[in-house]
Length: 95
Image: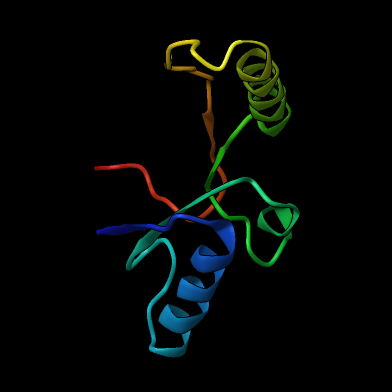
């Protein structure tokens, strides 16, 4: 069993609440966060998280806004950017 939390801060809060209630991460329950925040690296946390390319996201948004300012009728389009899992200590490998 594992929890997928939409943000590293929420993940760390979930880890704390689980620990207060006698659960060990990852032995009893896994946690996966999102954003690869600095605190996810801390030695006492070591959160497994999804790293998003924030710089590339910002660049894509700025580019899209510039295009729309020049041509408000420009059709919507999907922008796909790669994210990746940063494996640390809050998920265990399946057996």
